[in-house]
Each structure stands twice: as structure tokens, then as C-alpha cells.
Length: 291
Image (cartoon, rainbow, N blue to C red):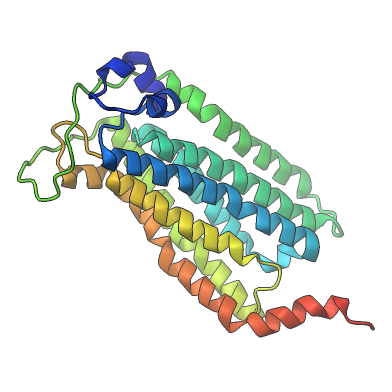
């Protein structure tokens, strides 16, 4: 992780030709075009994720029915998956960009949940409002504190060299899992399952309503693009010295499944937007018609 690397290495330990600004910003060596492409795609994916939530915020403000349009279980599954993703990224020593993206995920989810409960309880005050706000504050504090707690952990051994990608390499190098990485791997796997399960309640909600009114398609379109670029950024990154391609993929498998696996389910939601577009348009025009 970037905080661990900064404490034990400096730019002079990177291979010749590495880009200075990538080290300065991310604490990561970019030794060749594969690494540069990985960083570039990772940064673009963060922009996609950052932009994805704003159309939904605007849509919620215009329609005022976010609590009806989005499934609560979808949002809870999403924030549950993102929280596990964040914790697992730190414990399993994932790429810095993966960690940065995970932090943003959780913060954006908290804003989305806050809006959901605001629209749900603004006309129907509930005794559950205070406990829910407390839980949201706790989750936000956890998201902000996790990087600080991680920095206090043991310093990872520095990598002395890097090797290029060799998809057909016969080397059998395998990086063993530490106990901390095993825990992170398990939590990352739980994250992937939650991501996959979170889409099912939203698909069901759209099906029962026969409409996607109140939901911004840009939310899912940008998330799909971001997940694609995120997965590609992980796949393009060079393995560590002496580590085989298979071992590298195994260490990152839960995060690849979580990012690329949900594309199929998000495609189903995209199809629902097409199928229900007429009823959705009629629902959105109805408040504008004279009574």
C-alpha cells in the first residue's frame, strides 16, 4: 500500500525510466507502458465513479421519490460491498489506486444513503431516524479512520526489482499469502458477493414498478464504465518480482470479480431502462400535465 511503501522506499529504488509524478502522487513505480496504462485507466475509473453519483443526486432533487425508485437493499448491499472492499484492500495490500477508489466508494455511498432516508422520512418522521443517522456517522468515521489505522501496521518488505508482463511465461513463482492478506482476501470475497447480490433487489424493484422513474441511467452507465476500466487497470499492472501471472491474478481475484462480475447484472438493469422507457417517460411527464 502507498502508506507502507513511502516509509521504506524512495524513487531511486524504481527502475530507470519510471515516471516521477506517478511515484510522487501514488507512491508506485511505473516501469513500462503496461504500468503507465494501468495508472491511466485507474485514474479515469476514479473520475467515472466520482461523476456517477451526481446525476442521481440531481434526479433525486427533481423527482423527490428516491426512496421509491431505489431499493434499500440495493443501497445497503452496495455500501456493505464497498466497506468490505475498503477493509480488504488495506489488509490484502492491493494497488494504491484500488485503495483510493475504495475510500471514495464508501463516502459516496454514505451520501446516497443519507439522501434516501431524507426523502423517506421527510414527510414521515420516524423513531428510526436518529439510529440511522448514528450508523451513517459511524460508517463515515470508519472510512476515514481506516487509512490511518493501516499506516500503523508493519512495513511491507520493499521490492528490489520489477519484471515485465509475460503472459506465456513458464516461471512458477508464487507469492505466498500472509495471515493479514488471507483475512483481506476473505473480506474482499465477501465484498464481491455483496456487490453481486446488491443488484438483484434493484432489478426486482424495477420489474415490480415496470418503470425506472426516479433513477438516473448515468449512475449505472458510468459505474459500468468505471468498473471496466478499474478491472483493466488491475489486469495491466506488472506482477511483483518473482511472482507469476497466475499468482498475481489470484491475489487480486475478489476485486476483479467484484468489478467485472457486476457488469452482467448492470447490463440487465440497462435493458430495463430500454424496456420501461415509455412508462418511465409518462410517469415523469404526469406531474407537469394540467389537472
